[in-house]
Every structure is written in structure tokens, then in C-alpha cells.
Length: 91
Image 1 (cartoon, rainbow, N blue to C red):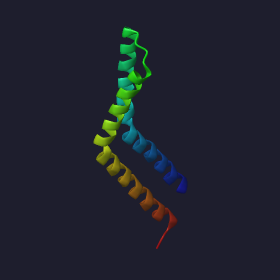
Image 2: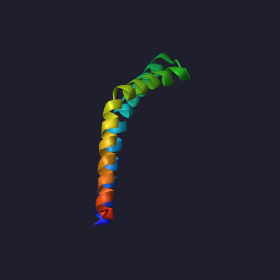
Image 3: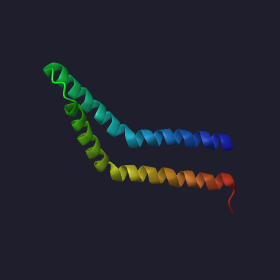
Image 4: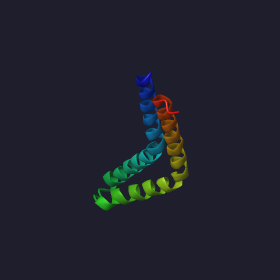
């Protein structure tokens, strides 16, 4: 019983982490690819050219997705605590 609950909690943890950090990571990956392509075509090898767009896009997406992230994390935490109470047999 406890092993099944633990396995379910781990699956949900992976799903929540994918929901929370998937979109910013994909956006930063796309920006990095575009900047790398631009640098290869123009032969401009400036480190800040690769870093700043990724920083700006990642920060903007985290600000925009903040309420969604909080809602997902709160729901997951409430579910996890409810399961701990159910497994522990609290009165």
C-alpha cells in the first residue's frame, strides 16, 4: 500500500516538475538555438549575445506563468499532505 502511494507521488512529482519548468526551458532552448544560428551565420562570437536574450525570455516567462506555477504547486502540495495523513492514519 505504502509503496503504491510512494510510486504515485513520484509520478505526480515528475509531472508537476514538467508542467512548471517545461515551458520556460523550451523557450530558452529555442532562443538559444536561434541565437547560436545567428552567431554562426554572422560569425559574431559575443558571450552576452547568447546570454541576455535567454535571461530576458526566461524571466518574462516565469513572471507570466507565475500564477499557474503557484496553482500547480499548491494543488500538488495539498494532495501530497492529504495522502500523508491518509497513510499515517491520523485521527
